Length: 94
Image (cartoon, rainbow, N blue to C red; front, top):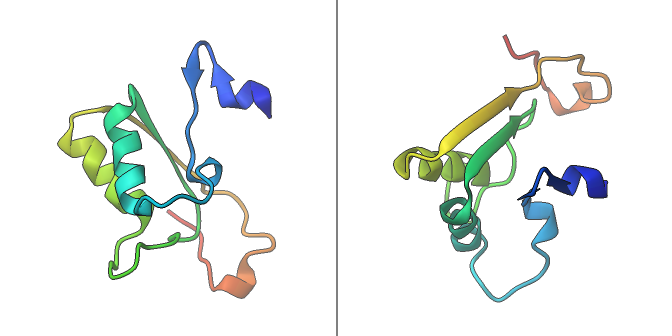
């Protein structure tokens, strides 16, 4: 996992590494986008969590911030099998 966290001098930052903090989660996520050199987005079959009071996921907010700031963006869409996800009502992405 350490090899994935640091690739060719880049630090990979993800929400799972934030831990508990006093800062607002959305503000912290958006600050991470502001500080990044390249925004890499991994999209799967589930929408993801949304900040309290928002219908948009954290990922939606982060992507919009990356667009607003004209950050280089790389997006990966997962379109594989749904094994183990059928109970979530997930459908294949086309």
